[in-house]
Image (cartoon, rainbow, N blue to C red; front, side, top):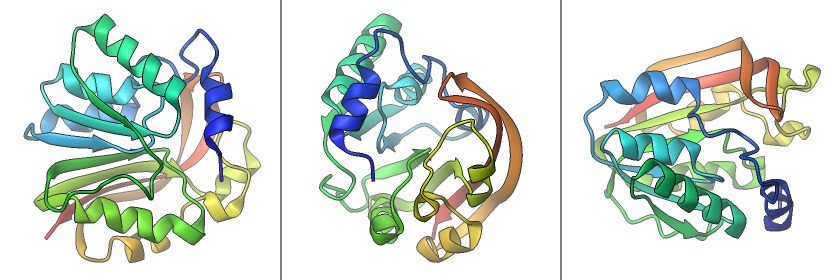
Length: 200
C-alpha cells in the first residue's frame, strides 16, 4: 500500500502530476446526475473535486497527503469554488451514515486486505438511492506502463467489486481497454474497470 510519504513526495512537484482536468468517466457522467453531496476519497490534488464543485455539487474530499490538500485548495481558489477537504486515510475517515448522494472512487486502489472494508464504508455513507461511481485498473494493467499499482492484490476485477457492493444495484459495469491521457503518470493503453451503482 502507498504511504503518506509516497504521496507527499509525488505531489511535491510544482505541476499537478495528474493534471487539473477531471477524469473522463466522471466528466461525462456527473453533469447528468441530480446535484447533491458528493464524497471523493483519496482525492489527491483535487482535479475531480474541483470539477464537481464547478457543476454545483456540495463537495467533500479527503486524502492522507497534506501536499495534496494544499494543491487541491489552491486549485479550488483558482477555479473560484469551495470544497471541504480533510486529511485522513481511507479507514480512519468518519463516514457518517446516509449523508452522501454520491461517492466517486477514481483510481482509489486499496490492498485486498482492506478493500472490502473501505468499499463498504463508502456504501454506508450513501443515502438510499445514492450513486457510487468507480474507475480503476484491472489485473490486465500489469502488462502496460500507463500507471497504477504493480501489486496484483491492489488491482480490481468486476467479480470482486460486485461482492464488495453486493447490496447495491448495478446500473453500468464494464471491463475495457482505453487510451489514458491524464498526465505522464496516466498515459497510454490501459486496462480498467468502470462501475455505476445505486444504493437500494
